[in-house]
Image (cartoon, rainbow, N blue to C red; front, side):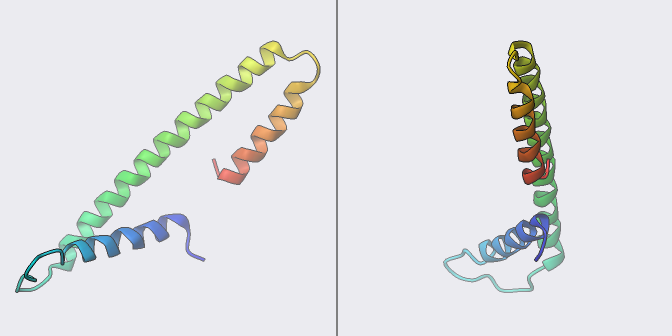
Length: 94
């Protein structure tokens, strides 16, 4: 199975190719695939950067939540919740 980045890179490439044909009359000439690939690569790079920023923000929020839980933990709830958070992080690949 392809990894997630390759999957959405393929989706972006196909969408750009399809969008290039959205004309009432199909243009004549040669399709410059190199230019389309550059556009696609730039879009995928932007998605990757935004995804990484979102991942970092989520990690920071989780850390803040854990700190807040530690402050109110008095019955071993912290260990239980920590295990849940670690499991979620591993499942999401964070």
